[in-house]
Amino acid sequence: MFVPAHAYLGSSGNEWECDRGYRKVSGACTAVRLPVNAHADNSSYGSGWRCDRGFREANSRCEKIVVPANGFFVDSNFGRGWECVRGFRVVGAACARVEVPEHGYLRDSGNEWECDRGFARSANICAPVFVPANGYLDDQGSGWRCERGFSRDSSACVAIVLPNNAHVDYTGNDWSCAEGFRKESKGCLPRN
Image (cartoon, rainbow, N blue to C red; front, side, top):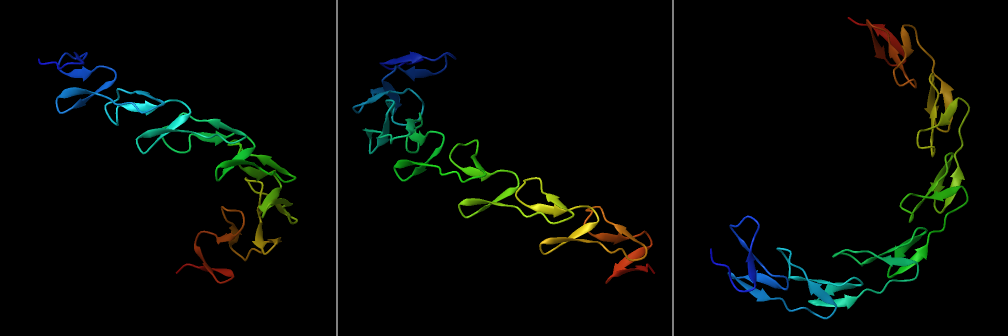
């Protein structure tokens, strides 16, 4: 097997690879021209070079990444090359403090906030959730549901009035007819 200059036989013994600092071009190994602040990258795709840490590729050059206050470098070939520390979020080319309102907390991501259980987001505040009599906080804690045997009517929980031959349904907040009967308006009529 022919192995061109600046190349070596691969581990399979059936193919050849270019030495570091060279890349395959038309059956030969051609020297990679490195821009300032770059290093050779022998991956099988791309230009054969990558920018050094703290720089990113732009127009076949490596430009310095400017990290704002409260930011840090991120090793990535894509994006800005920086992220904000916990408690700050990206706003343009800066890291702005996340203003957490009373009864709120930072989410796990560290750049957004949520309200404590029993409070709901309303603009930029956490407003208390009003839970009516015979109601309870929902699973998320930012809304409410009615207890079994009650249904929601605007901002209240009203008792379900069961017609003859009916029972509270599987949801607990409505009614269904017993077997052999069908729901018709506000009652249960025998099936034909």
